[in-house]
Image 1 (cartoon, rainbow, N blue to C red):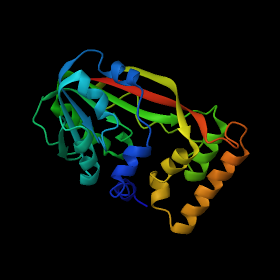
Image 2: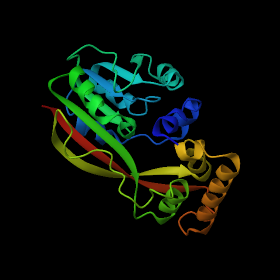
Image 3: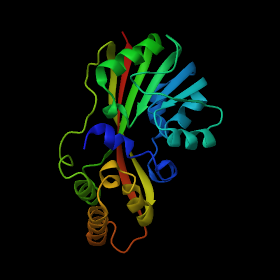
Image 4: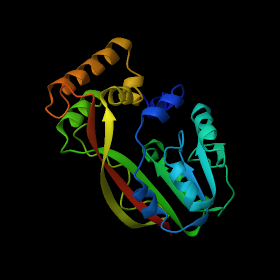
Length: 243
């Protein structure tokens, strides 16, 4: 299935996406926006999982997202944010209007060349672009096994979606943050129902995937017969300066 169709699979799950997907550690926002700025844009903002970390760091916060249902959730939880329908390739802001652009869990959906040109356009000279993704911790065997079930072709491949160099930008920082999230067994399994590969699967395949994940949890010493356990994450962070 083309990536655009995978991305559109999120259209009907705004509430579940916001409820079950992990957020980002506050430290990630601090690395990207170490001091208060006048205006910041969260691009591909979804339901505002990362946008909410920008609100305290910017006098004005914009959120741009192509899916109206995701923005409906964002507007309900972050009424002070200016939420706009748009894409990375066509950002509905004027030139040089923000000091920071962030992209959390979304840059891999973008058409990189046109998106970088648009991000550069809306940033002030010397402005900051921050990209970040949550990754499975390779040391957590049971979570990696569940990733293999959901993404059999990509689970053991490199999933970096940014390069050291992006057109129009100079790399400033690449780092990662390790953190742990307490999570219930039910929430962990429901989280997988918001992942694109599970969303677009036919019903029998989806049932099989979730059943295989339950088997993983039943067999792992860290999760067997437990309703609550610790889920480790790695948040990868890339920071760039507009050239």
